[in-house]
Length: 312
Image (cartoon, rainbow, N blue to C red; front, side, top):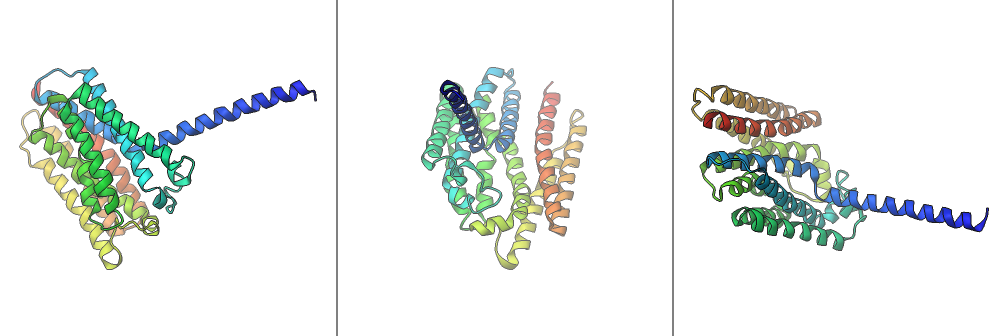
């Protein structure tokens, strides 16, 4: 084989390796942002924004909605990235998370830290400059409580689930604040729904991966005889409260069917929760997790539809 041919092949091979490297790096940075979590964050933020607009009887601005979602997405992505930076050594001990970019070492800790700070800071500044200060403050408060309260408590006490539910319930407040510049009782009602939803959702995950969490030293579930009672209470009490929230409001002539559907959704969620605590199997936990992922978007979409009907 001639020299020029060898050189040409080396150049082609080098370019192919370069393309694979950049594709891999982009995929790793995308994974750092936790896109599967951000999907639900964007849904709940968007519903909060829509309902905030309707509450103020103002037209929906798609540009303002886009700015709100973009800023929130950046802060949420930064939060997810920084969480993986903080927990990289513990994630490496869990089969479920060992292949994450920070835990596996595919990205250096410094690169992950810089990327997370850049995303979060850009999102906070963007919200403050383009949306409003209240939305930005709520987003930053979410980041701080998640990273510096919930994250370290995961290795100290099972009450971390309660603490973590507060930042997890903030997205609809961010959306509402972005739309109206203030928060009222209806905004806090949305926050309460998301707050309660997180308990059965996370209990399903914690039970499915309890051995992984134990191996890494996470105390998301108590040890010993307290484990099953704790899981039962943390699953059923919030589900019962969600059912109550679905039926306490007095239906109007426009809203009766929507409250009925919302109540049925919550009862269905409760059914899967009961099956989970009675069977305590991986399959039952998986079904509860799937129901939780279906339940939240449907309930929030129902709330948006109800608001549109009652105010039209």
